[in-house]
Image (cartoon, rainbow, N blue to C red; front, side, top):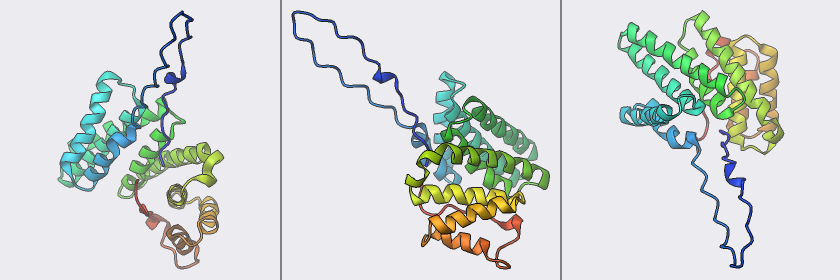
Length: 237
């Protein structure tokens, strides 16, 4: 679901100089570096599931990149998300001073990443993925602020992906649309939520996404807006 960052510099080729000796065959282009999210996301996902060592590996990988390039947007956003997760652990053990400091540091890192790369969905998606669950246990004023950030992120992804949206996998479309539906519902934007849920029911018919959308659309059967929570269906592969 995350857009690859393509290194294009290898497309530039030096001019061929004519000589009496047959020129060597052109060198193969350098291999593309692996997408940054693919380098760290499994460690982060495992870390968020309780594997402390995996989270430390993911954070260390981000820190290594940030030492060389402090303005690396993807490293910043993933590190910020990990820092917010650490804040949650601090709050749960009763250390509110550390939790507050980590929380603000993580938000600042993610916000900086978005400012550096506002149209990069490889930055927008991790921030939204972090902020939506974080907002569920936040007090009302803070919850709204987090949801507004997440809405901006997902709407950006939706806009950027429009030219190819119909060709994305059902998983990618379903996660994005249901994420938007949750955010709209919890912000009280009922008409927007209904349009998204109608699209899920229509375009992803006979999928688990359509089943959930149908429940959310059914009058009298859906939960209160505050309880609309979508959990990832499928895998992260």
